[in-house]
Image (cartoon, rainbow, N blue to C red):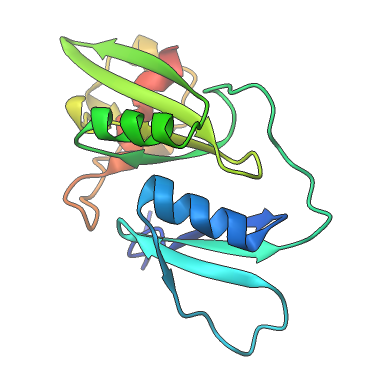
Length: 174
């Protein structure tokens, strides 16, 4: 397979009912910074950036909230962090409901926090760097039987020095 000329994940885009409310959330809870967006756009929205990724908010007054029970198995974006206690304190200070989970693998422990933004989009904060990145090609075959074979190639390092997506292999068994 030829390598693709991709560099990194650039941004995620969310439809939101109130752009100002969502901007405040991403600034205060996750430390994002409001940045300039193209003035040629003819719709309400905002761009934020931090942690090597952008969040693009698209205003839609009749947007339906996805908010329901917090379920770690729902679609979500995940941010790695080095101090979970700071995030927990910030969520508590802002009265943001969250659930926690712990994953143990080979003597390593990963702590996870899951919560919703104002429009119900789920966010995870974790210290996933605690679990080593192991290419699927080095895993026992019986654990790989349900995975596509194209993964059986060593993953290249990303911009951040490791292939973070492969760190979520441990979730497949839960």
